[in-house]
Length: 212
Image (cartoon, rainbow, N blue to C red):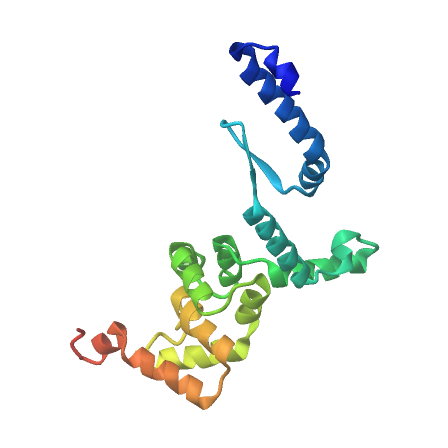
């Protein structure tokens, strides 16, 4: 190789040497590079033409795969076999899907004024999420919990002197209804809600107390 390079002048030596070294590199590292490409360890930077090693991308992909695996979805999601599979799948998805404002309107509309639900749908949705009512299944259970709503209505009538015909509003159900649903109806829990209502501006206004 040295004799070959000596026969070339300096204008040809550098390009020729670079070409030879490149060929040797490709031949020597062809298999490792091919294996890395097949595993997805290499990524191309768009617009720059550069190739780099992406450990972070692989880590994220593996994390997503682990999250999906942890959900343990029923087999019927991957392959529905009969009508019972469809029902089971819908129930499972209801336990996994996070509620939307539209879900709040639909469910709250069954027990409250539709006009008020529409007006406060975003605030109600946000309060539900904050209080742990996150899935469609939980939202439906809250709305269907007659005992929870009955205790809540009693508190609003007694403490806030609300109209007995319609004591609850969307924010009442989304905040303290959700609180009772998640924490139970023990006397200490109900008493906690009572004390919080007594701190509200509505309570102070109706009982002649100046609000801060």
